[in-house]
Structures are given as structure tokens and as C-alpha cells.
Length: 121
Length: 143
Image (tube, rainbow over the protein chains, first blue to last red):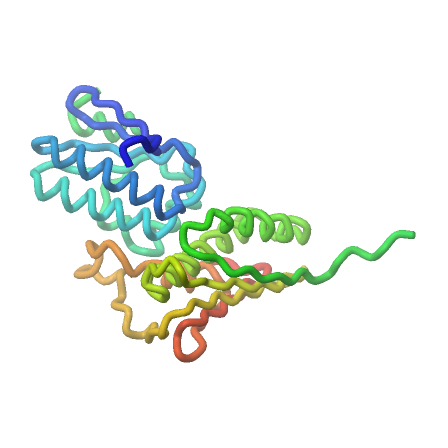
């Protein structure tokens, strides 16, 4: 549906797409599907997309959300770009460690540090 | 007259996919866990495990048939929390799920729910034919 309220906030600055979540729990599957389709659309519209997804304020994350991150990561790589993650609190970081996805993703302490590494500011 | 505080909480509910009631079930369970001072780590573990178990039931068990139900039952006391999540599917062999942590599987976007449940709960097992997950959390469990 085109009238759905977006579950993410996206800012394009210095050629880096910064994504933040509206909700503190990224659990609900329909919300995750909506986030995925919005992100896929944006990544597909960009040449060599540089994206930072910040988890500031996020308290819970399900495996379906991890699946979306993997999809976005693969898509960004395929298009010659890169996905970075930031602001992951320790309890959520544990989810990444258990699933060993900390090996797959480039994870930064803060959004600013992630953007810096991209050469944006 | 004052009555002794309740020492065991039991309940069950049957839900269809897209039913937002899962949120209120999670909230009720959290309230019980709070009463027994389970703590934040336990609440995180249990909330995530219930979410993953219900999702698996809807998606892989009921194959997203909107007419089918997933049932959740709980029994919680001061020391342990026990859950049963039962879907209306034909069941599956949990051993057949490929290990998502292997390097060659890291980029496969699904198949992590059960491993998270196993990591966060004290124990978790499927009853035959594989449409009935039982999971337990014992207080003091650490990862």
C-alpha cells in the first residue's frame, strides 16, 4: 500500500544514505517487509550506494530483520556500493555475534564514524 | 484478608498471522516475568524467542495460510518459564536446517530463528512431528 507510514527515516547527505528506525522494536514481520521494500527501492535507484543503517534507540531485533540487512548488504555490494551498520547496543550486538553476522557486516560505533570512513561528513 | 501472591502463571492463546495480539501476549508475559524479577537479560531472551518461534510457526509451519493458527502456552514460576508453540503444519526436521553461521551460509537471509532460540533459551526441542516447539528458560541462565 502506498499510504503506509514509513518505518524508517532516510537522509541523503554527502552521497551517503543514512537510515534510522522509527520503532524501538524491529520484530513485526509486516513492518520488516515494508522496511525491506523501501530500502531495496532506494538501493536499486542509486549507483554504487553508500548506506549507513543506525540502530540508535533500537531495543529488539528479530531474525527476519537480520535477513533484510543481509539482502541489502548483498544488493549494495552487487551494485558496487557498501552497507555499514552503527550504534548497535550490546544486547543487539549479541544477536549479531551469536549468528556470526558480525563477520559479514561492517559495524561502527557511531553513525558519524561510519560516515567518516566513507569520506562523507 | 490478604491472599498469598500467585506462585505460578499459566495461559494459552491461539493466534492467526497478522494478528497484532502477539504484542499484548508479549506484554502479559513480560508483566509476569517482572513480578518474578527475571531481569532485563531474561526478558530480552524470552521476548526474542517467542517472536522467533511464532514467526517460524506462521511462516514455515503454516506456510502463511491466514486461516491457520499458532498456539502458544506458557507456565511461569519464580524459577523457570516454559513455553509451547504449536503450529498447524506438517512438521519438519530441525536437524535439516543448514548451519547459518558457516562462512558459506552467512549471506543466506533466512534460517536464524531457531539458532537464536537455542542460544537464548536454556533448552529448546521439537516434539514429533516437528510442529511443536517446547522451550524453557531457567533463571540464572547466561549465554
